Image (cartoon, rainbow, N blue to C red; front, side, top):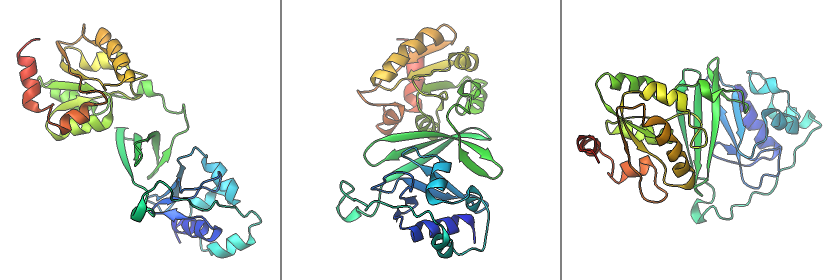
Length: 278
């Protein structure tokens, strides 16, 4: 039996409630499932508590050795649970606020944005509008969440950097924005785009200058306090090194992806913007 299947059986036997791939976490008082349990390519169990509990804290709360989540084994989950002196206690699941007939489901969307062959960013967006970002590293055939500070964001390339550099040889206009999902949305409509690792609070100015030097750049900051603060720094540092620079800001709360959705940014519109200096 795969480690993933065995671990799910063990959680179920121990009394944890699951909703899809989300399970109650045994390491904290979890009134609504918040621990994702995914299957790695080799059958291992990949766990991540969205409340912040570590891998070892989860294992310790269940009284399990970590290797049980990585290797195939024949042991019956129910028998192991019965013999284990550590029995976790789970809260009664509350569905309040999770919606009428859909109370058994929690809506969330996961996107992965790969910066290098072995480093990627996972963005999770929940039904209440809240978001969570976690860096992952590839070890063997499976992805693992990286401990904070283990990845040097300053050493990472810009998102989709190679494609942007290729576009520069054809003198393509490049849109600079704040999120990877906005970059992907722009590429989907034929526009070259990029962003840096770290978000509005950590603009990677040296890398941006190096890659975007002498290009035609349209800067689309998020229209929120953090984005506008970042915009002042970005413009001051990058405008002197690029060939042409334009700034486009959407309505309050909008980002580049929102502008794409309402067709405020199209390939024709940005070509026209650069054809006529402001």
